[in-house]
Length: 171
Image 1 (cartoon, rainbow, N blue to C red):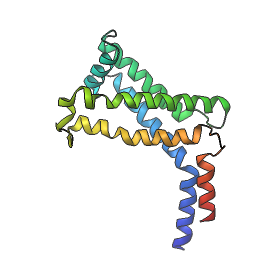
Image 2 (image 1 turned 30 degrees about the vertical axis):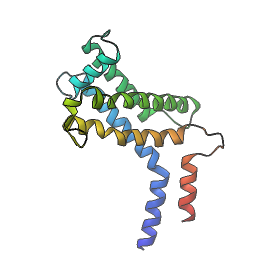
Image 3 (image 1 turned 135 degrees about the horizontal axis):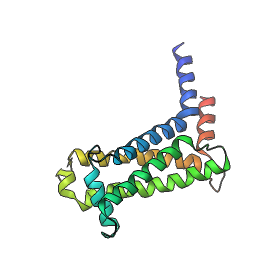
Image 4 (image 1 turned 30 degrees about the horizontal axis):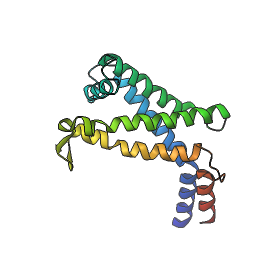
């Protein structure tokens, strides 16, 4: 009986893991993006503004930078939540979203180098709360890689999801 439950649970997870990951990632990006539209609600708002201002060579005002970031995060969140990956348009939208996620997440790691006094209590082993917030993005990056592996075609035609499901069926 326990073995049957484990097999059913394993099959469920194999079939749904990427959908669950895509929805969770979409919620996180949409939520964090919406917070950036409300000044003072996002604890890393100032750091995000500073990073974006540095990346734009101070050509774009900080308030505009944070709104651009908010729109970007909301767009990625909505794409992850609602792009039908099984259609051609949905698959293209998810591919563009995954590339956008990589670019965004690369930018989120920059404060670790640009503003070390704000993200490290003791460099390199004791991050501040803001540093921990940034470091958790490694998990988001891993999720983006998994979604990308299921979304992008490969030369050999291998796809992540069918391989996982086949492995679970034979277990």
